[in-house]
Length: 145
Image (cartoon, rainbow, N blue to C red; front, top):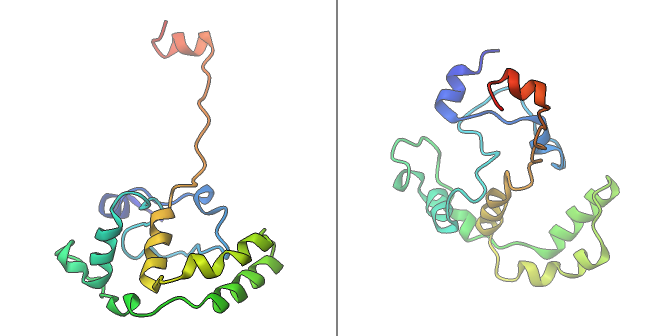
């Protein structure tokens, strides 16, 4: 399908290599809203916090609902350990040290903190294309020296 109107509105679309490490894969066929694949580092944690509580404060035309309750719900270390164990059976290489660090890592963290951390990581591990070497003949044909 044509993506021209979507790229004009939301920016460049995601490519397969950007989600190669996602477990489970989250590809769909319908694009709703902006592509968040490269949002990591684009905004501050505080911007995301305000946006999740009341999106129209930072994006007046937003139709996204607010998620203020995420700040009131705290993360459960036992729940995370169970999820990590399930993912490890599927091949995610969690170590015993990873499991041992869960309690400290989640102390005082809310679901909002987790969503913000997830958003800040998006696009940061995308594969970087290797520079393409151009031989002398190709450079000359392209107008180079």
